Image (cartoon, rainbow, N blue to C red):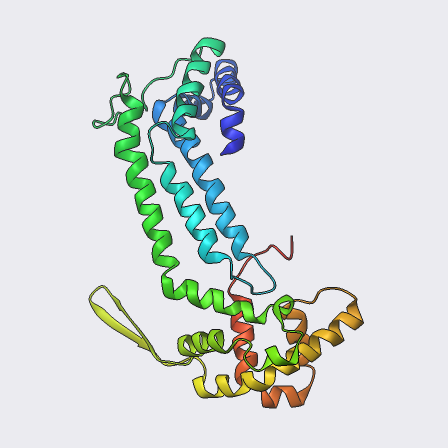
Length: 282
């Protein structure tokens, strides 16, 4: 979207020349679309919206399962989305600038969408105002609601609790180890160790607990020390900051660990699967 926004005049001119030279109907159709108020407004709005969504995506692509910054990060990004609803926001003024530039610098006539929309008067000076009220604001409201449904308070609390598995946060003093991660582990144990139910379309759907809650809490008391010890071993072997994935892979090679920490190993695998992405491969 950013590339289309940046190269819009060149795209329109190229498509028009292609149609004139070859009679290509697709080139004519695309050039007509790109010369419409509605499409230009949509391209510029989406270039801003997708930039925000890309930041959310990037925040979720972590190898160390540290989502502790998610609450404040989500608040900031949602405020950024809300600001796009304002008349006079960056995308709003950019549409005005772009349409003026197309007309004055490139002699490109911007008109209404070829499929006439009865509730938008593109010939009116109030077009952009109407577009914001009738399309942009409802779209942004729906998007914000969707994000809030995905990142509920409970979900964010669980994601934040996963930060106790970040090796960088492991305590270094003996006095800190006994209390480390107790509150967060209770949050994780409550979420994955209890039956869940959700109402959808008037029907209650239930699923059994994924893990054993009491076993998780019991295993954590010992696992904390094992993780700290394993971190030191990995650092010594690789001479680099280890991730949770490094520690888990190392510990799973030991049959004793597998037997003692079966529930915790399952939990760590679940947490590592949360940020599903191709970021590591890329």
